[in-house]
Image 1 (spheres, rainbow, N blue to C red):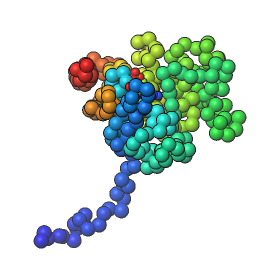
Image 2: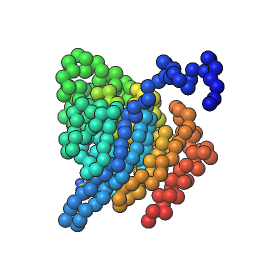
Image 3: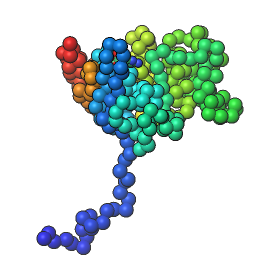
Image 4: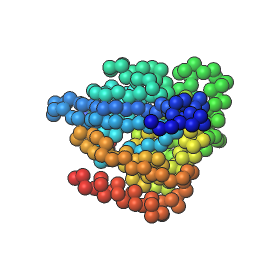
Length: 281
Ligand SMILES: Nc1ncnc2c1ncn2[C@@H]1O[C@H](COP(=O)(O)OP(=O)(O)OP(=O)(O)O)[C@@H](O)[C@H]1O
Ligand SMILES: [Mg+2]
């Protein structure tokens, strides 16, 4: 029997200030989704297990058709899973094919196209989700103006989407997604339509906004350097069935500057992902 001194209480009594075990923002187990069409059954997503911490930025990457959008749509409450479970802050998102409305209010979505309403001003677009939730006019206008400032659109509040550049429209869409203070921000190739320079600027902007709001993000992209630049972890998926092949950590200090992209460590991760995706023909 080991002897125990009177000072050594660790084996018997848990310290009262021990942190509670952290509930992940997102807890995904054995998630799958099949589609049945005339051509047969497609296993779009299969056997996905993934936990995402509060404040974590996860990038999803992989060949076209590997199930990235399908996975994001299930997490976003837009598409019901065939198998498995998704918990947001410990609460089940799906009950069969029904989505839990409480869990879904924690989510914000940004798509490849900004999907702004053309007949609403920037401010009204940003404020719309608050209006739908019954936030009073004065409060939602004030918050929408703050959000416009956060994404660098001060001075353009009264503009219409057609009067903005593609990057500005995406920033307005990000502000709109943030307007409900989502616990989880889901982004599906949000910068796919932008030129390289604008895209680089948007990456820096997104990083700043996410750090400022401590948002948890799942971000789909085809751009490997973009994934490694933004993410804490890069999830690499493979097609048919859509599975996770590997998860690579990108443990660089934040905020990151574009200079990171010239470092050996950064390029090693990019090269590995490029190689591994390339060999999947
Ligand atoms: N509504 C649907 N009906 C039938 N099949 C579908 C449907 N949605 C997706 N699929 C199939 O599921 C698979 C995964 O599609 P998904 O859109 O999730 O891929 P992705 O990784 O987002 O691709 P991309 O990079 O091209 O956007 C594909 O084989 C696709 O044909
Ligand atoms: Mg897609």
